Image (tube, rainbow, N blue to C red):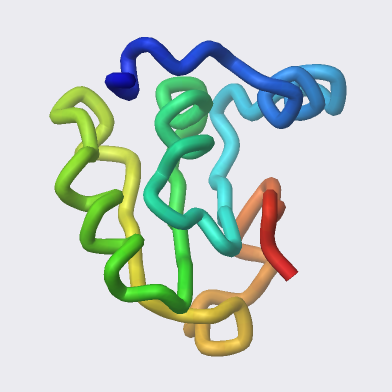
Length: 98
């Protein structure tokens, strides 16, 4: 199944119910391969996706659509490793991560 065929799931619906991410600076902790990131990123001003799994971050970078390249960045990191303080983001969330 291609990424274009993935329909918005419960995570995206939950984000919409919480007010959406229009124009927001977003930190996504545990972004994995970008499955959720690619569904909402066009609405956000910027997205930093972090995950401790290097292979997942590499996959996310490889699959990053050109149309999102100016607003989405993926880094191998945990939330505690970030140099930016939480106040630098309008929204911080994680999905399928503990």
